[in-house]
Length: 42
Image 1 (cartoon, rainbow, N blue to C red):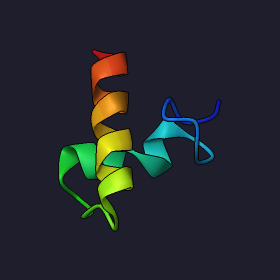
Image 2 (cartoon, rainbow, N blue to C red):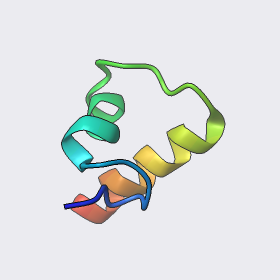
Image 3 (cartoon, rainbow, N blue to C red):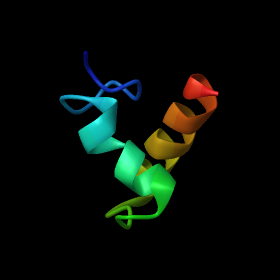
Image 4 (cartoon, rainbow, N blue to C red):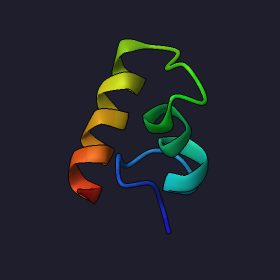
C-alpha cells in the first residue's frame, strides 16, 4: 500500500521513521508530508 502522503512505497518505510523521530526529514516538504500522514493515521 502506498504511503498516505502520496509519495513512497509504504508508510512504514517512508513517513513513519520521520514521525517516530528515527530519521530527520530532508526537506520542509518531507516534514509536512510526514505531519499529514500522522494526522491522517490518527
